[in-house]
Image (cartoon, rainbow, N blue to C red; front, side, top):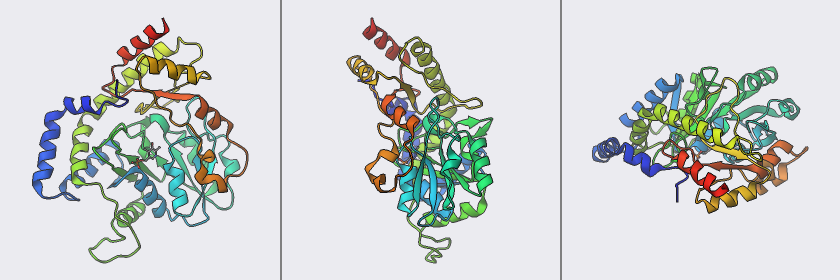
Length: 362
Ligand SMILES: *Cc1c(COP(=O)(O)O)cnc(C)c1O
């Protein structure tokens, strides 16, 4: 069976570099903080041009730390997309905030700026824009709405680290951004990890403090914080992968174009759409069809793995049952019934996948 993300092939491709990096950390006696972390943060900053980069324990932690640094208070409302992974809405709720769910654009699946203003109330404090499936959300429009209403913007680039919009890195939009180094993300570690990006040095300082038990100098705690650290081993792995990242993004793009050439010939399938001015990390290759069930069966017969990102809208999750109000987000709901994704990592043999689908259709 083809793996959905081929981490084994990636390991084989850079094996010697991984072995060197792993031995370096394991023999160093230094497993938390230190040189590996400082170097990775510097390299992430060089790569993106972000002024401040702070690594932490996961993408979800990065969201929670960013929200805490933005001083989200119980009862505050935050606008989040209805169609995405749970983390953005979950982190708002964990801090006592109330997520308000925005509909998406039917073509790109990104949060739509169209009806955003209708969701703003006197309690609204910010907007979380998720750069879903690898491309940056329509940040000019979102930032304008935020500015008009005095809201902050938090960018979730867990799937879009490395993507640009009008030449600007996804993580440099908004007041603060996050990414995830979960193993199967475009830039993934060998365990959990995340990072926060911001040009605002005050927010950066606050995030660093919160992630380190509310402390800047040892055993002096200014605020209640938490332990959220990336470890040296993950940093060393990420440094290896970052060296090859641009090349991998090109391979992902090649896969994307090959898939598009094939799937655009099929009648009941809609291929993914990349917004004007955007590059993508192609975190997911997401098709949609009103005949999803039939397609999933065909792929299964051809031994091609599929995933559904995401089978339920967030406003339809039991955990948010008590806070839902207003009308249903029709485009998000429809997407959750029609989408399915295919393997697209740099080490996926897309030509072989297309051949097996062709055979299966013949
Ligand atoms: C994966 C993901 C996260 C969470 O990242 P973790 O590192 O798994 O905590 C947050 N937001 C989005 C959009 C994601 O895809």
